[in-house]
Every structure is written in C-alpha cells, then in structure tokens.
Length: 364
Figure 1 (cartoon, rainbow, N blue to C red):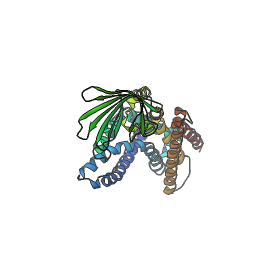
Figure 2 (cartoon, one colour):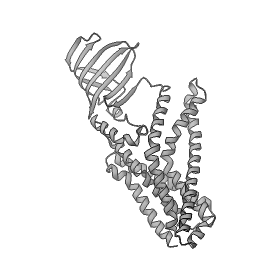
Figure 3 (cartoon, rainbow, N blue to C red):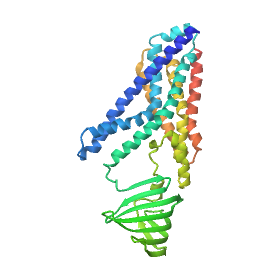
C-alpha cells in the first residue's frame, strides 16, 4: 500500500510538472506569434511597443485555453515516452505489480482535475481578459463608429453616416424583423435632431423597411404618424445582426445559461451558445481522452529509438482531432446534428478508440 502511494504520488507530481512546462512553452510561443500580429496591426498607429506587448499578454491565455487539449496530448506523450519508457521506470513499476492501465490512471485523474479547475476558475478570468483585449484594441479599429451589442435592455446599434449619426434600439429580433424599434438621429456634432418610433423594421436587406413609423422632433412634437413607406440604409442586415455574438470567448462559463436565456428572449439562435456550454461541460473529459490517446501511442506501440515517429503521430493526431471537432461542431450549428451530439461525439469516439488500444496494450 505504501509503495503504491509513493509511486502514484511520483506519477502525479511528474505528470503535472510536464503539463506545466508544456503549457509554459505554448504560452511563450503563442505570445511571440501574437506579438508579431499586434505589431503588424499597430504599424500605422503612433504607439510604442508597450501596447502590442500588453495586448499579447492579455490575449495569449485564451489562445492557450483553446489549445490545451493538444497541450495535454503532447504532455502525455512526453510523460509516457521520456519519463517512463526511455528511463525504464515503467519496467520497475510493472515488476512491482502495476499494469499499463494502472500507470495511466493517475495522469487521467490529474487531467480531469485540471479541466475542472480551468473551466470553473480560469475560464471566467480569461473571458474578462478577452473583453479587456477587445476594449483596448477597439479604440484603434477603423470601424469603431459602427457598433452593435445585445443587453438586457434590448439590441443596440450605433452607426455613423455622412452627416448624421444614429443610435438604434430594438426590443428583440423576430425572424427577419427588429421589433419595437427606436432610431435616434444626431448631427455630426452629436446634437439630437429627432427620433423614429417604429412598430417593426424588415431587415432582410441593408435597406430597412420601416413599418408604422412615428417621427418626433427634438422638442418632442410629432411630425409624422403611422407612416409605412420610410426606409433606413444600414450596414447591418439580418445575417449580420444574428452574428453579434461571434466572439463567445467574452462569455464566462458561469454566465452561459443567462446569456442563452437572453438570446432566446431577444429572438436569437442559441446554437453557438449552447454548443459552448456543452464544450465547457465536456472539457475535462476531452482532456481525459487526450491522456488516454497519448497512452495508446506510447504504451501500446512498440517503436524503438525513433522520436520522430512519435512527433509525427502527435502532429497528425492533433490535426485530425482539430478538424474532426470543427466538422462535428459545424454540423451542430447548422442543425444537421443535435448540439449535444455534435460536441460529445468526437470525445466519445476518441475515448472508445483509446480504451480499446489501452486494453490491447495492457495485454503486452
């Protein structure tokens, strides 16, 4: 019992250290690559190197979060290959009565714990950092005069045209219509001119058709009422409005259910948000499947003194898993598959394949 505890403690400590080192490596690589991208973005702005460095530091944790399953896959391969097999430590563990399956249990448990901690603790921090990143970078965007967002008070849109500025509020989206719309018109100095209160706006195209419109001037007097032939030219149509939540990284795991409810109340599709919720719930099990897969590649395959083979296997596996996940997610977003199936199917397939491979490896 004592010997087993000591071995398990050693396995846990060593695997965790490998994961931390691999994460640090990915973090540094991601920082450097993103820094070049930020420098290229700010080349036409009068800013020092400090702003690109700050933005890269804020952004790179979200990049690591997205790549973390592959960090675990590479960590598992490194751990089993270089920490156990190449040092012959696994032979001593087998002589003490441990099998390949018992060796992989501790890294599997560690991966699940890490996944739970990342989703419940680090994901909210990452969402705040992404929001900060977008806020800072948004001040330098060339199209900052065109903004749209969804809040508990409705859908808000800001647009700048030649001589006029507009702020638009709608209660909700109903198919291709914005319901209960108010358009506030300002001059280029942002002096309030008039407003349009509209029953609904057909936004099938970027030329909105305004129905049952009442026009009110700056003094509150009604200029027109029950008008049906007015139009409004916008840069937004129904497709663009529906994509307002394109960056889901700004939404914390703990706020996902509230955001799903908010989108439903505003008439938006919740497919992407529900997919994000399912991916968050599946994240620890995704990490577990990566550990099991790394065990199949190292403990189940007998390759002597050929590190390039393992590297090739790891790279090809990462690419295939990435595109398999992406393809499955696309099927869910387009309603070809239920959201739950599209998220969990790749994990279940990898898990089954890994379990079969490990059972085979355990017989060796």
